[in-house]
Image (cartoon, rainbow, N blue to C red):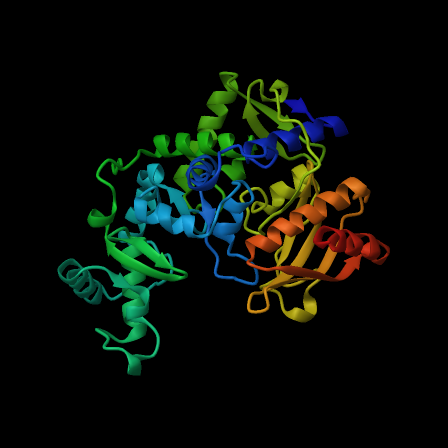
Length: 405
């Protein structure tokens, strides 16, 4: 067990984690559509989310890693069979090569495990499945909305439940999307023929998860490997596999000052890492690098909680604060909203961490990142309302003004 105590050692761990996520390099996966394909194959998933005060999470995560990425590329990958939609720890796009590792959960749901609905109408499911088989794909809007304006097959609530159950248990897949309107079709018509669709053993599943997490995070905890997966057998298999690899010395354990234990590949601490650059990245609250909040606190000393689900009068930072990564530290958070009809990005509040040192390099990196982010939102101008601490307001406003000038 290696004890990590010195600040320089923590700096190296942060760099290791960020490099594994592709957040230190300029274009670690390439550019455009090819880069987006490479990115999701490496990081393992991008989480879907409905909140649209800024670009949606699944677009934002790829934008943070892939130059020249545009939101239309996710649907292109979906239609081309490069990715598919299912449940990871949440609704997500996943690499098509990972399809077989969703089969255990689908089988569990088909066998009676509850995901969304405890009571399901199997007769209605059979009817819906037969209709899709004979008449073709169905859009989610066809089983929802205003029944007075549509010629519907069934009442909305039971039909919607049946559709989602068929999707979650694997009979249907999402073949296309228009925003958050999904099109469902039979799995055998959507899944590319070359994809491995054999059920993995529990040991193969554990090996896949461990290897994936090590590759995309650099260092992992037992809890993080099976993050939000309710499968005791899988957790047990992962724990046994980690113990075996530690004993074989292909993995090594480290303990942080707070007592948290992580594992990483043997020799990873001596590995060459990308140099740090004066670059600031505006991250999604659902970014793969920040979604495990306990890990974020342990490795980055960054206490973060999304507050869109918190009543307005109890929010500390704002509705949808975006973490700000500068070099290898998370130095603040920014609550903002894209007013798309006015093409205006409003930064309602900017909060800086206590350790953040504001200098010309940071201000230049901030203005450059905001300018790029503004363009990504389809906006032409940006304003900033509040900065904390307040004495930093003038430098940041001046930086934004200079970037526009």
